[in-house]
Length: 477
Image (cartoon, rainbow, N blue to C red; front, side, top):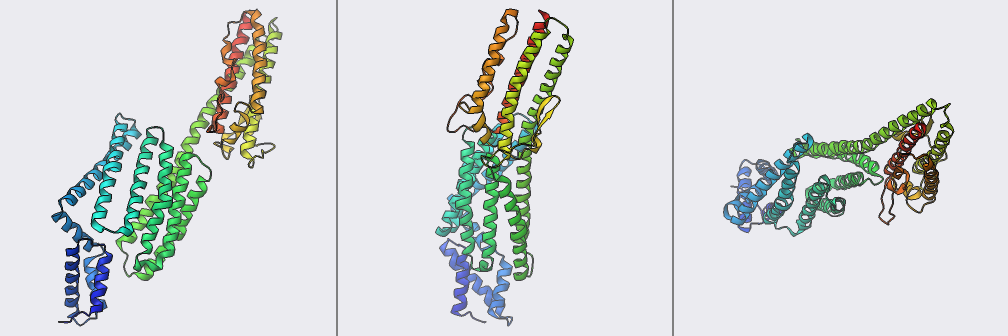
């Protein structure tokens, strides 16, 4: 019977140790078993390298780890309990999240309870038990940092999603911490662990490009959730990197180095698609839904604005020859002057948002003058959720805000002078602009332009509603 040389035995021993077999007695048994199998294959007259290749092919890439897991499961009670806990909590948590998603979509009661139970099961039971099981199976100090960073990444992401969906305070902070851990700790640690694989030396460039794509994707999703700039840029960069660089490159290397398509290659293709496509679609859908919600409210305010304008025109037309018409016309002119002051602020805000940093455009195409008054086409605005316009024009103390407050005060004083007509009109809706506009200035004040424009639209409609009521009262006197 052919015998292995010491060099051959050392090669087999090193390969088995690379499988992170932590159970010492099992390690010796596996080395001895593989050596015997190789010697048996060599009886057919083949060389060691071919015999060893056949033995490894029969075992598969994970068979040695499976043997260790089965051994630990049989002899270690704590390991057995921890692994059962990991399996049960992982399945239960995933099922709970699935049902929570269905209940949330269908608006059925109990969605929040299922979501909390699912996240707690995964974050506080499954992840810690998985960390312990991985350490028990490998005892690899080289991968300890990878396991810990993966644990905290999963923990913060799960808790951040829970807090975000439940609208609890601190959601953005938790998600940001999770994203930072994944980008600067987990992904680099995963890349380094792949570099340590001697069989993957030719794929180091692929690993670097793949890590960059994942970091871009995480950064893009974080920016999208937080409504920060460059979200679309990072997401598009990750899609281009992963789909048009990493995937073709990995496919080419796999076909050159492997005779058969392995399960790992299939999993990589499916995993890439499941990671990128839903992420991009969800990102675009979140942005569209988020923006359309604001646009819908703005369009409703615009419809109400047009209706009130038509109502005013109708009242004035009916009273054109009455003794009250001069007073009514004067009130209407005063109201128009105030509306023009508000429109001027809207125009400045859009111009600033559409220009370069601190350089407003001179004539924004998004703002149009129609028969019903000034109208903004929000679908043409490039960045409707920037904070700069509100900070520059609407916050207390800004020049435009003070001018608007002065115009409101003049209008209020004029309307107060109509008390001699004993108008039964509530003046409170035009008494204080801070009822509609931002009233507190702070270092952390973050109000988007869309919110500011919506506040101005509400203010204009409140003024028009007051005018319509006042005109009818004057006509009735």
